[in-house]
Length: 147
Image (cartoon, helix red, strand yellow):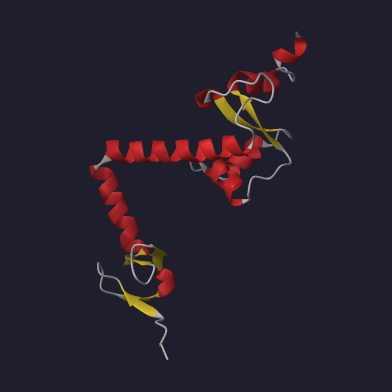
């Protein structure tokens, strides 16, 4: 009978910690990182300070991937004018509650992560280009609907 481990030693700080003190990592046999969460966090911060350009590029690519996933899930084009250039598209909160939604997730891509986590809820969201989004925000109607 195999004995289940309840603790693990961090290879950085050498402390014996519970398994929930380690991040998941599929590359390791036990499925957990070799550094504990606090050592991993400190190590990541140090790396980021030494590699600012690379970190910024990784963050930008990750954000673009999240945005593409969300925009595609909601139709991939502006619901008003039909433009499909990803750089011009954004998620519109139909109920005008975007400010509250963004406040709950202050980090950069939090709204996209939330929509992915909730499996892209159908109610209350649509894709709009920035022009249509700003027009509906400030004049309550899109110019495409006026002409």
